[in-house]
Image (cartoon, rainbow over all chains, first blue to last red):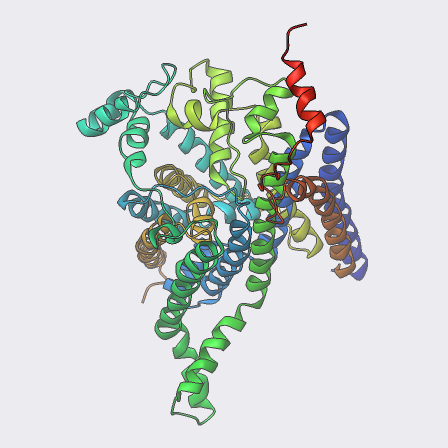
Length: 480
Length: 61
């Protein structure tokens, strides 16, 4: 390629990068000028953009982390993600200690582990986790876009599945769900997911490490010592030690043997551990950015809630004159921090209700909790779109943006993997971000339970793919 | 490309800065951020004239 063509390509990329950035800036400014309340949505937008920039910069993908570790023994991504969790946890604990956290822990139980297994399998099969698929979409990877669509559609359908699926509901769930006395518009006795949520998941304890130790969650002791130190730092250090001894140490010892130093002292082990941590510099920088941004995101949103005197964006949407798709509690999905999958289910729920006329607001997930507002005014959808946009900006500036058409085989895996992720995300009430990254960093034990499930799920999927690839190569005559 | 990235970072941080400047003052004003909020105001003793004034308010004309 000539220098001229390279320059032309760079100029084109630069134009599109600033076009995307300009578009988001224009949306923020014009909507704010139209109605002050839109700033609430802009908070999601700009933090979403930062997540996208950082995700693409660090190639931050949970699927890659597990795949690299189990398939080829490379720990870089897994280490980077763990560092990001620790950094976010530190910021989050400071926010929590001020009593300003928007985080709500989830019910802890075996369901989180099972959901993690399903989600872990799905993300390896799909070739990207929920957040990874967003940033890869921003890079122009259309296979990742199929994964995003697949996660979206499978969730929206799964939360509304009833009929024959009611036969799979244990009697105890049914009675417990009915006993919750939900509003009449929520048909809680019909639908597998409704009875699973109201009759099973909600019966589990909602706690944090601080609470388990008898400390107030928003006290300095509870937030910093309980949630951060004991709930995140200590388990993360142990986890990294396991990764070092099982995977990274071998390469470090090999290097030393080559250099003629065979004996490993304690100091050498520490050096090896540090070498593993510092090897993932780019992912760690991304982790640092995500960690700080995620913490600030909670703080700024809390400020906006206090300023407008609301606890949820549903009240703001109603004040702005949008009452369609708001839950029976007057709420819409407004997590107050980084989340990926729920908003993906919402836009499909909204579309299905609009186009088919079916009622998607009679289930717990949409009708009682999250609503199905128009995606154009859905705060969390602004975040997801900006995440894709942020990743696109970074990819364009680094010359890494490229439209990649999916092959039939990859599209099939994307649909299967995306569906499994969608189901896993609903069972766990979140994905690798909402159910793992955010929860672990905020001292919620259910995050670790989801993570424990993701490990065997991803391992099974990696082994399956190894078998599948070998079988395919043997068929094509590449076998031994 | 590096300069372009810095421009993107500066613009993004500009918006984030605005959002922080817009959202955080209520947290400071209410004392939520500084930890000084929520303290009850000290009860001040009314002087005699003021106490009489309030008593007179409840009298029938």
